[in-house]
Image 1: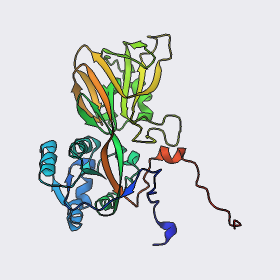
Image 2: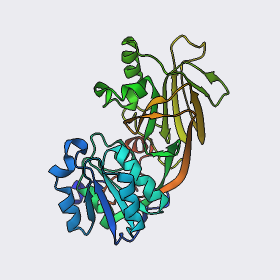
Image 3: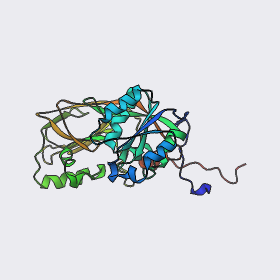
Image 4: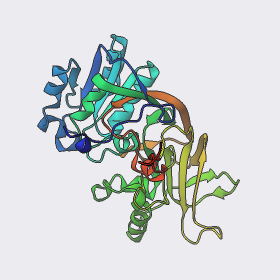
Length: 321
């Protein structure tokens, strides 16, 4: 292939946090055949994985993914991968972290937000398998709420309720405020959430709380809604008070190592886009560099916002001696 047509490759150096590693010998890839409208099945992902020496496990309906991942790890797998949506990615990633195994994300979901922030070409489903055979490794953070791992974010308040509605399943971080406005006009009942922010201010009437595994870039229009880094060791927190409930600015963002909030009853939440109820108190923590991840050396290696923030490469002058 003409070098000019090749996709950007990961820079393997001290600044990138990536390092070359030997390929795993007994990798296992779990495949959700229903994710992304059957994307993995259409691509023949299981067959292609097996040709590369990867054990491909196509999940049956209602199969316990966590148990299957733990069984594979305990049985001698030396790398775990998941082809599916971000919720299933988090489940296998948590098992990989618990067993200190490398994890491979194969973007077979609908939106593949985690793959994008990880620095993968999220449209290169088959190319993602190169992580098992010609991958580079980096360490990233893993976040938890009440002991449950998440790789992207947990949304609460109006947005947590909105995740349960099919009309809002595709809403992204950059459209949280617009989604909230629309849902509020429909007369949504706000959950009674309470938290204290980093300045010591109490918040009792919250329309939105978004807690993310590393903070999102919110000030760069071309890369808004992605995270510049996944290894800062901090949660990103965004909240929006109900308009008119406080004299302060209703919106606020900050970072923290942990966060706790309370509610009068179980809270509807979106955890990596999956609807579930969380019991009070809600305790969020970040586990710095807890997860080893492998990505294809042919993928970019950084998210769009990281590329937006990175200084341009210094090119030597053609007249330099």
